Image (cartoon, rainbow, N blue to C red; front, top):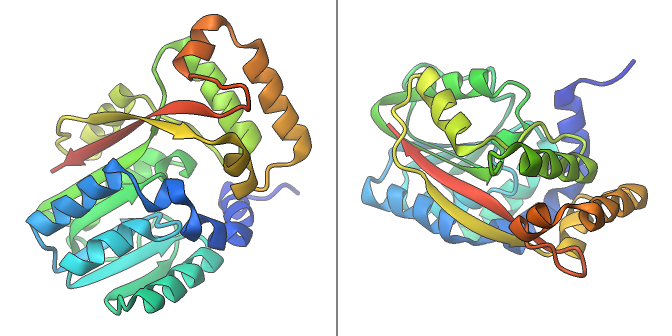
Length: 252
């Protein structure tokens, strides 16, 4: 019997927890600075890092928050976050394991909710966003950052194919317009998105996920067969490194 999507996510990410804590792509970036600035401007009593992965949002928000809950499906990922938080002396970070679609928190528990590079793995993003809205206090701040689809069908097809070959737990990189509609449907009022370009160094990108060599070759074959328009948009380089679109969107 095939495993559930949630089991696939934990299987994919659990063994790679340390790699994601150490990942330079995840540990820095203008989007992370933007999230930290939001927390600094309105210091939250209680913040939620939704799908925390390597914990970089938690580490960035913790200096300004009373308490941060790092929430993730993967027990191994949460253990890595706990160890890193202890090493940094961030005693106000607590971890909690579970699914974003069924948050084990009461309505209005948090006055700050953030999620970064997680939602493209969620089985049901609509349910996850509704849960995020439910646990956010009235007047609270939410911010979502993720890789996004360029929107154009040709480019979207190539992006999703490459993402899935690299990581079988990938669901979808949503376009900015899709994000805005999903947030509105969940009860949020989306602000103006900040769109950025992020370069991915190919060798470390596939190594971080321990992508099977057959899939690595398939990704490179797709890149080499891309029409010029797609290759130029993703700025595909000779070694396979490429550039994606990413978005940070504040919501109230």
